[in-house]
Length: 298
Ligand SMILES: C[S@@+](CC[C@H](N)C(=O)[O-])C[C@H]1O[C@@H](n2cnc3c(N)ncnc32)[C@H](O)[C@@H]1O
Image (cartoon, rainbow, N blue to C red; front, side):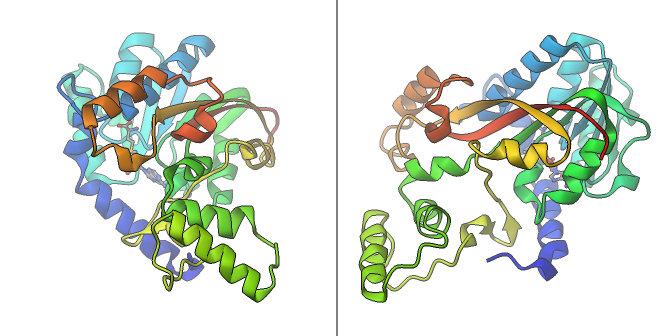
């Protein structure tokens, strides 16, 4: 269970984790990267959206070490500013921008939840990647996104897919089914224990293990929460955006436990079914990107 008073500590832990993983994020875009190219698939989705909307002025929140940002500026020639709350990411990002012959000052340290740290002015396209999964509460960030976009501007936000829990057959599945799908359903004690036992057995969880609601949202002191693609429009539209579409990425051809059985085959078959607009993404993809249009100021 997440505790509000620990929200600042969760954020500190998250910044530290990103500070320590700068090289790893850069490597995921390398042509020699042999892991699943989830970040590259996400990049392709964002690139298609930029191509479709031809924005003039873009804000990229959670830009990391600026590898995708530099490629997008070079391909589309739009004005683009990046912010990231990890100092090490920003330091590396400045080097990457410089290597591409771009102004290193285009990236600054900033936090989506702190309006004073976001660049001045409004934008006609705002991207937020790897950000909402770590927030204790979405409201401040959504409100800031509304303020940073002009009317008619496009919002592109990445989320981790809560419904993937239906296909992962592990602790996440137990938490999702018992604590979210069955939320508010009051079973008589003996019946409830049978149900609990049924799911624990299927998902390989010890009978006496306690899994509190949403406890799977916290790992090593870092929030890693999920959003549901079937009702994300409600979250987004509460902040005066009109939700348009979800695009799924990082497909899993089988539950993740099968990855170690034959990693190459798992990757090959997952890439084969990877398709951002296929309905299977709701269940088989671990993440998605939502596209929305700002309709009015809050
Ligand atoms: C998954 S990484 C993606 C980096 C980059 N977009 C890429 O594709 O290589 C997410 C980035 O978001 C940053 N981030 C997470 N939460 C943030 C927040 N509240 N404000 C600003 N940046 C944040 C992290 O420091 C990290 O660099």
